[in-house]
Length: 278
Image 1: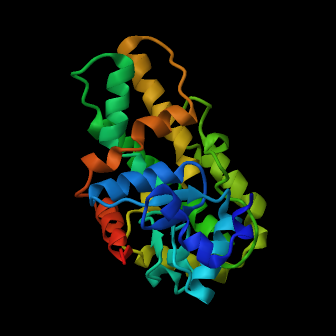
Image 2 (image 1 turned 120 degrees about the vertical axis):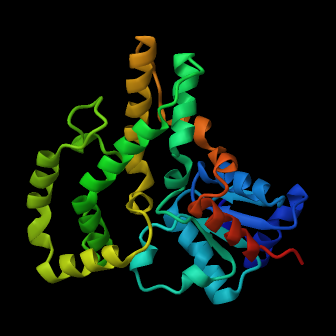
């Protein structure tokens, strides 16, 4: 049964059927465990249900804004830092710090731990090397980021990042972006944007205090993480491994507990202050 066959009041008390005082709705199947892990950090709990997509979740947000619905929504921040919206301050909507949950899940120490598991070598410490790869990636992706945010801000409807960075990598196993591929792509869409739009977005990004890593679409960076892991396992074990999206998710979903002092996790913990138990 589709949730919107339920009344707004019924949606608010749905958690009671699962012996939970609070009900939180999220976008997709990856989100319930992520937000459960955040709630564990503050010793809170809730019934969390995914609604099957961002368009469906928007309907729940509308119910909160227009009807003061008695439930919560937890959602990716996306590019809301660069849009005119007052939803960020809404007491019943919890937002990630970065664009997506992946920006918080993919930490250098967590990636290093996965490499240790697959390499079967406990002495490996590649955190600094991994951080350097991420720093270079972050710098080289900047122009794509500008166009991605501009497309969203001005309703261009152009998918700049997409769901994977594979088309912009030097090759399918690479951990480096190809600047030539990026420039060719930008030239192919450039005429859809005005110089003023691009300049305005660049200024907003420059003024944003967040590390650029947190502004990149989460799905876009997943293949990078997979390739980093495969690269170092290959070096240290001389073996190719199979590693999929679900594997990376499973290995990094609880990374917040080891990074609770990081700015993004601190933000998520503060977001849970919005949850009020009547």
